[in-house]
Image (cartoon, rainbow, N blue to C red; front, side, top):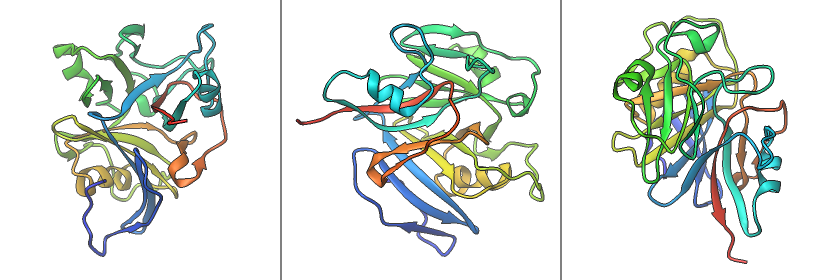
Length: 245
């Protein structure tokens, strides 16, 4: 269950229980959906290509590619991509690097430095600022680079403006200090970077959080009867579970 502040500033709406907990929330006049993944009990990983090397692109394509009794319990787009849907930044799947780490200047939101890497291992996940990642080179079973960082060591990204007029549906991820929990958030109305960062800093209290994308933000959450259609995606993050039947 997501640890929340039960105050007038945050209102949670009841949803169906599940192994991956997803809840609707409101904060400072904006609406969000928040999903919590426990790395000690859930199989969290990235998805990009099928066994033939073709980029998957849709939640349904992942499900179709899974063996019997395996199902996609949660998923979200997980990083920016080129027109051919290759990852813009660093990408690792099952320890194999597909795209290198980018540490220099680049275009768009990805280049709103500092950006960062979402690093997944068997029992923990971490959001790590890119230059720190380059210096420490942690081992990641799965990794996707995106940007900008939303929260850096407990502080909002220094270039976020309180009075910004740039509003989009946005999604991203933050991780607990011990790496045991990953919190995935998608806005349900258009928000600024500053407003979006506050969910991670002030409500979830994640020391570090990373922006995934804006216009193409999508969520697959069967526990709340939601699976967003739309544009073909590049990297996707998701949880796999096994059915009892």
